[in-house]
Image (cartoon, rainbow, N blue to C red; front, side):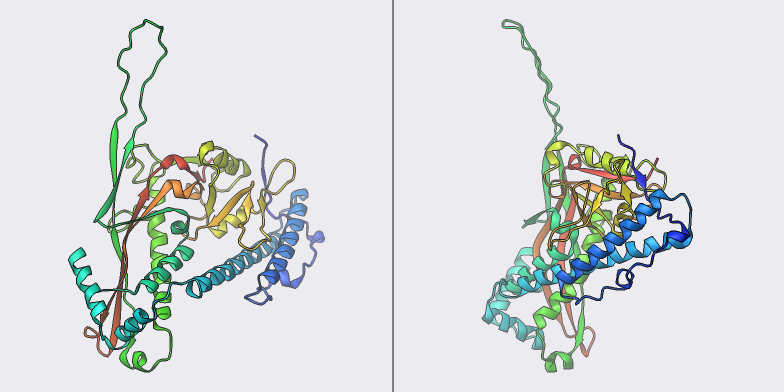
Length: 422
């Protein structure tokens, strides 16, 4: 394989040129102006590559110059984050605006319940139905609020956005797997046909855990405030639930929470849990760094049938290190995106920023590559529940909000993991 080089940002002091101040400062573009942010991103990428090219041609190790390149790289990360936030906000606004399902009568009933605890016959019916279904009390949120939170969770929780999601009506979810061990053979026209091996079947189950939030507001605020109570509660829930789900889907131990992706890699706690084995690890080629060879080995190590929907999952710090990688033909492996809604790529593969992924360090799993929808299964039990509690902590009213969710790997063959190791 063609040898790759990691540009370390080594520049001769005499060659240091002062880049435009806007490259190193926080983005000066309007925060809701994607076009201006893309223009600044292009300037920053050009500046970093100029410095990196000088670094590759230089043999002098200069700490000041290394920091100079790192500052530009950090600015690129800031700009990418700003662009993603703008696009996510626009998507959320569409979801919460004209595209959201509406039931004005139901919304009015829920607002009355939220502010004063006044429940109509329809909400009482929902409470009774919920009790009969799950053996626990509490009001279901209005259908438009429930759908909105679920949709916004998908926007914020990265693994949920890319994984397979199934809603269930029971206490858990199971799937049967074949070990694919079926025999066959060539025979002559009149030769005997002895029995061949028969594939064995194994069942894998995903239990659901419960995630909750319990925001509170004073009764006075609830009575007097002029604000959208549904939107406020949805904002509170989406941030906390997405954060907790993101951690659990990646590293959860399965105790009252999902089994995380990283627990299925070779050598991890759930490496033997799936009938088809563990998620295979591929070494980066260096004991402490990313290398171009390692990333290409990761990409080409995935079976061809999973390539169509495959993506690279890594955190922003790791993506920053990958921006400096070049191939033997002096081409950068990382290519930025200057089009709204399109991700940056490495070797032509889309990058998805996954905040909870480990950073580059010895023996860390720094990146995942594969088809997340084929690899990971998210299991949702019903939806969002809200229980209004004005008694426990007077004069505050608590809105006990819960969601039952599970998850785990359904096909380890569809994902590969990059381990930082020689």
